[in-house]
Image 1 (cartoon, rainbow over the protein chains, first blue to last red):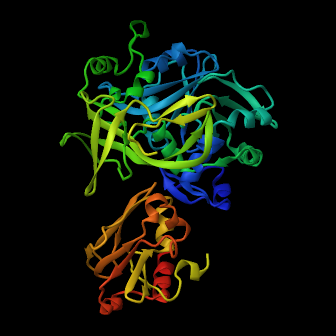
Image 2 (spheres, one colour):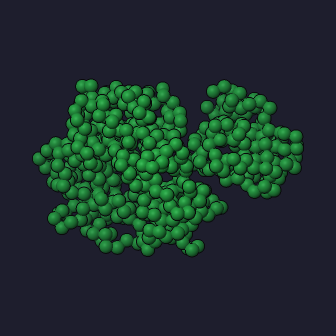
Image 3 (cartoon, chains in turn purple, cyan):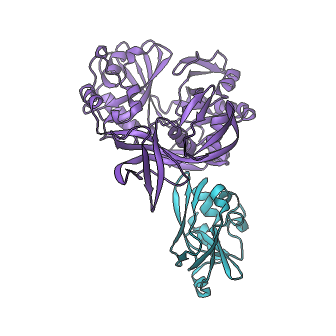
Amino acid sequence: MTAKTPLHDWHAAHGGKLVDFAGWRLPVSYGDGVIAEHLATRKHGGLFDISHMGRFAVTGPQAQAWLASLLTNDPAKLIPGKAQYTLISNQWGQPLDDAYLYQQAPERYLLVVNAANRDQDRRWLQERLGEGVEFVDHSLRLAMLAVQGPESETLLGELLDEPLPPAGRNHGAFNRMGGVEMYVSRTGYTGEPLSFELFLPWEAAGTVWERLATQGAPLGVVPVGLGARDTLRLEAALPLYGHEYGPDRPILEMPTARLGVDLKPGRGEFLGRAALETQAASLSKRVRAVVALSKGMMREGSPVLVGGREVGAMTSATTVPAWRFAGEAPGDESYVRPLGLALLDSEVGEGQEVEIVYRKLTLPGRVVNAFTRPNGRYLEPIQFDGGIK
Amino acid sequence: MSEAKKAPGGLYYTKEHEWVKLEGELAVVGLTDYAQDQLGDITYVELPEVEAEVEQMGEMCVVESVKTAADVYAPLGGVVAEVNSALEDQPELLNQDCYGAGWLVKLKGFDQAELDNLMDAAAYGQLLAEGE
């Protein structure tokens, strides 16, 4: 059966093109389409209903030690009001999932996992539950909304009763909006320098969303569906489970996994540590960012060649819009460029010219470090030599 | 949306959601409103070469959207007389005006008898209704 988020009826009533995704009925886009929603997020801001994600509460005196034994990052680095990227690894260093861990209070954590992996993750964690830890799946009681982009801080500053969490990524705090208690965190999946995620009671999500949408509209902040959520994460070169991560692939093939894996000596033992140390020393393939240098198409699965020799394949790829900047801010003109992430032989490094094969055509491309860079409150697209202007 | 917008009269349609309009010796070809709506934001159109020969229901060009890429089939066999090069810079014309400025290709030298293999607006409208 397909589940519905608390905003399902709002999406349907506001032009959302609803599809089934990971067991949930969610909008791909609204009336103006994926490109408009992507561009609006980068220039003004976007609202995302991400209540389909899995949310587990982990509490108790042994919560930190237990999380430390099963997650790749070190929860001991957190303090109440901080969050970290992390992975759930098996003993072979393969990902069960990637996740975000929020410490909300002493002995109180929230672990956010991918919707498609929620049941499997819950089973895995509950089977390994120890003394002094309470584990509750709050996915259907706690809604989750994201407010991403340059105007997100202004919008939430106007609506929240308490001051925003301190500036800087991963900071969070309890807050209230019109009497609705919520946890607000400076996190997100768009790469935006200013970004927030809100955790709030399921039954209050409609009211809060309505206020965000109404007050956000004059600022140019729009509701955004799954389509632009994917192009935004791809432009930010962020991984997606099932694409860059897979159950039979080494975790550290994805470069950003290093942000979520702590192998320092003082970190202690955790499931998968030995395998991850081996991966850190040597890997035959790595995920790289690849941008096309002419118009054309590329998709997941497209072979990537160097001098006619296949060196890997795209793991995610599509055409992504971008603003042409006028000085320090997005201007009025936009363009599109094909870009994506690819699993390539390790020796293929940044700057390497490649060819991407799609159907009968071959597209010239280049391995790059990133597609964007933070520029004040904006995320600015990087223009590449020979790239699409 | 009105039926006329979904499938205007006076055109011929394929079950693959292409349309054809006869203009004297030429057959103008495009994608239907249903097709552009299903594809979502169209970001790239790979047009055929002028003078290329196509067969009825053979591959003619490729349209890519943020969501997917789709083959476009030639509703009639013939020779490509003209392509809509405006789509190279403005592929979104296909979303905005699929029966007008977003046309794809004009064919010449086609066989009138092949029109019998296509649907009229009423039959195409029926096909869409059955699919809904």
